[in-house]
Image: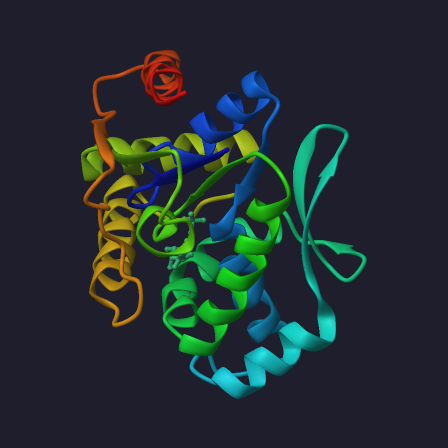
Length: 221
Ligand code: C5P
């Protein structure tokens, strides 16, 4: 079974996707982490973020992997755990440029479909319902106001122990800018699939969102 959860930045996708995957004993796949890892590789190899050929070569050479370690999903490049490093504002600022590259998307979508072909998955991202898994049994599109998403991001940084030099307004501005880029790129832009169920999480608790999605999953079975 495939559950697709898409939506703009910091709408709560990964938080609820992880809980749902755990409850159903499905595998959670964080596709954003794969684009973040590609961006991290570009920086590591001192490549320009628009250097499609160079970034693809780095991906081929280093191998990006999502692994579950003690029940936590981690992102590895070769043997290095980069789970924390890919969440920094610097990576967030450049990921939309890297994720807009056709070759990078092609490579990531192929890997994502391979994973979803082998097991039951809850996959979150921007193009899961529209492109990666168009036949997913359940498609959810999570939205929330830009302000509440900025507040969540700030809280998330604090919880992860990441030092933030930005104000709440700056975080909100960055989120809006990333959403604009993600929804205006040529290939697989951020968009609600026609058959997706939209949930506005602004005034909802995590538990309420989880329950609403579990209800949709039950309905589809
Ligand atoms: O979900 P997260 O905010 O970590 O995603 C980081 C970035 O990766 C997004 O802003 C977007 O540019 C890209 N992305 C994408 N397609 C996906 C998932 C993420 O283009 N399926």
